Each structure stands twice: as structure tokens, then as C-alpha cells.
Image 1 (cartoon, helix red, strand yellow):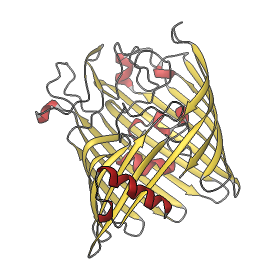
Image 2 (cartoon, helix red, strand yellow):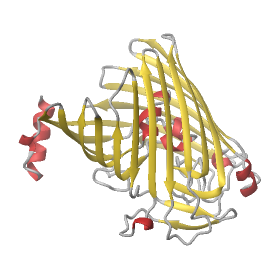
Image 3 (cartoon, helix red, strand yellow):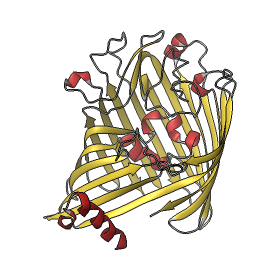
Image 4 (cartoon, helix red, strand yellow):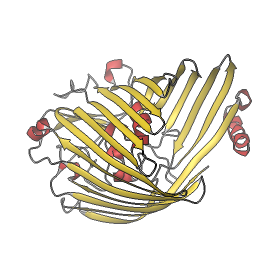
Length: 395
């Protein structure tokens, strides 16, 4: 009740319409701690260590407003405005957007599902995150390290529809007119050009994104599938601007009570979608596609007919008692033959990780994690180690 009143007061200051909502809730999360990271096996400039304060390790720090208006006959208007920030210094995240995590308005009904408009997660992130033992958090341990499309991927300017749930089963489809993700292009030898994240007037002068998903959750069994495709900016002067990065992911989890077992497999072709960065590794560095490895600067989307990868994950989550649990995973991204033609020295990228969480209450917990990645950016001999501990509070 207190949060609802506070949120209404905040909205009234710049909208004057809080009273029109059936409910408006202020919510958030603060995650901060201490961490250590080392990178070795690269160039002298790349090899380094860092020890200090880290923000948003288990989950990104955020606050947001969530609203619902009952319009009658089972129809509801809904919205979310969610800001991301660095709890260590108070600055904005997501390239300094005010509501960079989410910003959407929608209509929904239990009989036909929902339709939403704005900046939202893709269905790979929606449906595959529960299968990841690290729930898409903990830095390098994140499943998105090898399954890029579910690395909490957000598309701006998206129309998104999801069906109601039928006996545990639901489907979703979304289309973005301009996802506003930085991109770079390869012609099979080097990176030849890049494009920014603006929303241009000419439709074909934007990248565009398609996201599809299917999910089944019933009892101890959870199954999920997703497909993402990025259509390129047709006006970019690059030899590979016809490449359309595509990734499909299949995953499942079964709860045996004593342990939850997670499995996932993915194929990515014609590039990579949504890189997972490794702090300090090269200009525009990434543990999935590295700018220096591929001959240019980095970006969230990589377009190249020469790039293809197969990804694998095996994970376990085991409760210790009612207040604590341990979780671990192995994941690998393996370049296919086309990548070997592009970068003959490319190797498999492996991630080994283990984590622990202790809940003081339903809202406050502490955590610790260790992750080791070898083959950073598919470069032989380059590795990184991350060790984190911190506290997370939800409100």
C-alpha cells in the first residue's frame, strides 16, 4: 500500500493522471558487492586484473513503475517504465536512457493474451532465463555468454504479442521496427563498416528484429524454444549487408526436488546477436565476438555470412535448505566451419561457473560466484576469471 501511494505521488508530479489507474506500484532492486577479475593470455594491453566494487552482478540495479487499469469486461491497460542504474556511482545504465530496461504500454485480457508497444525483452530472454541456473546474471556465468540472443536482450520500437496460457503452454511473437542496437558488418575477411543505433526515417535505413517463442511449464517440467532474426540496414555500404543473423534456442529444465537439471542447445548463423562483454578485453571487447579478433570495433549485433556457432549448456541447481541454494553450469560456444575459414585459429569458448545464494528474507540475500572462461573471443589461450560476492535487496 505504501509503495502504491508513493508511486502515485511520483506520477502526479509530471503526469497528473495517477488517479486514473486502478493501481500503480513503485518497485526496484539494488545489487552491489565486491569482485575480482583477471584476463590473461592476450596482448600486454589486454592482460590485466581488477579488484573493487561491482554493481548489478546477480541482477542489474533498477527501479520502475508498474501500472494496471481495469477497463471492464476482463480488459486491462498495463504499462511498465523501468530504469537501470549503477548503484556504485548513481549513473544511468543502458546508454544513459531514462527507462532503458523497459518502457512499454499494453492491452491484455485473460481470454486473448496481451499486446504491448515499446522497449521490451525478446522471447529468448523471457522464456529461456528460468532455465539458466544463474538466471541470466552473474557476469560471465550468464547463459547469454554463449546463447547471445537470451542475454537480457531488449528491442526498442517493438510490437509484442503473447497468447494466454493453455494447460501450461503459451506462444509469443514480436517485431521491432528499429531495435536500436549498435551493429558492425563483416565481409568474410575483416569488419568493413558499422552503424549506430538511431531510428531513421527511411524504414530500410534501420535494422529490424523478429522474435518468436514457445514455452511450456507444468509441474516439474519446463520447456522453451525461441527464434530471433535481425534484418540489416540496407543502406549500409558493406559487402555483407545482406547477412541476416539468426539464432534458435531449445532448452529444458526438470525439478527432481533434490536438484534441478537444465539443458540447452542453440545454433547461430550469419553473425551474432547481443554480445556479452568481458570488462577490459580489447576495444569493443566481447567474449562472444571480439572486435579486435574480427578486424574492427565491436557492437551488439554482428552481421557476417562467415559467422556461425553452436552453443551448449548443462546446469544444476540444488537447494541446501529453505534459505540457501547452490547452482553451477558448463556452457560452450563452438565456431562452425565458416568461422574457421574467417578466423582459422578460432577455438571453442568454454565457461565453467558455480554460485551460492543465501536468503535473509524474501527480499534480501547475499551471494557469491566463481566463473572461469577460456577461449575468450574464440582466441586460443586467452582466459578470464571472475569472483564476485555481494548483497541484493528488492523492494
